[in-house]
Length: 334
Image (tube, rainbow, N blue to C red; front, top):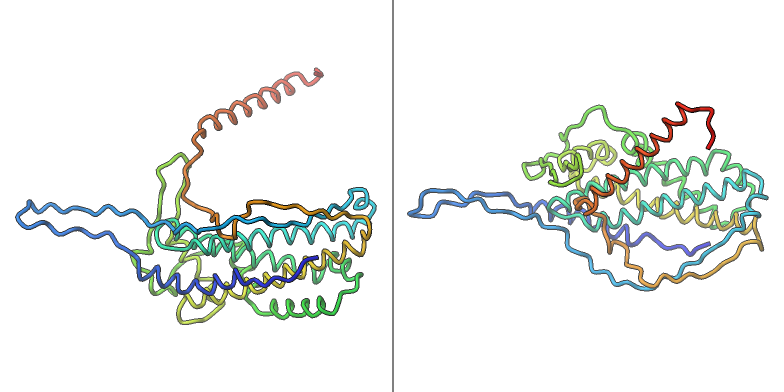
């Protein structure tokens, strides 16, 4: 269904994260009080500091060729339920894993000093651990479930069987399982940062925006403390090395997982819907490179937020009035 493309972009970026984290540590700036001027009144001035936003990533927009497969709805409905479910489930697994991989790249490329760069670090961890959990859950379905029994009715090429063995071996290590069971979908009973010995006042910070969003707070301290369960997986002396090692393993397995699922989905479509689907070519003219438009935590509320809230309130009031009329006049029909 698609050519294998290695996760070079993701893995190369993750390999640079240790250097990025170390650079952020070296460049961390603290607010200092200026010394009184000689002969002055001894008044101490504060330097006003603006946080450095992550550098904008120059991204050339280029055309991108997309193959559009149309599976006739009638042909899908004519399939046995288990086959139809297999096509739908594999598509869902690919949607989620590929979205998470692409968002992960944008977040990782935005790591830096200052509030936005620190928020991008937290997002990178969150996306990497969510991706690991999705891979764990998806592969469990592929290996041992009703889905597994269905797709095993189709003969796999030798290359795909070898890839399946590679994924099974990669997932036999505790990394993905531990992230899924202890981190991604569960909160710890308690948090601390005993393993993060380099934590100092530059890290123990929270940010609160002055805007229309209620509760718009980012805790850099909490995002670092939440790394403790992850660091238990890899016992490196430097927590940055441990973290990069975990990320490398997650992104490597993600590449194998997405390639296997895409090939498996193509195989099933060719086997069960041969001659019934249509392939078209779609050209998206202005597509940025991955990471060209990174997500941001610190944003302004919409300029028309009050009007939007008023509209939602009016719609809720109108719906409530309709429900009240139906309750008080149950025998009336419109």
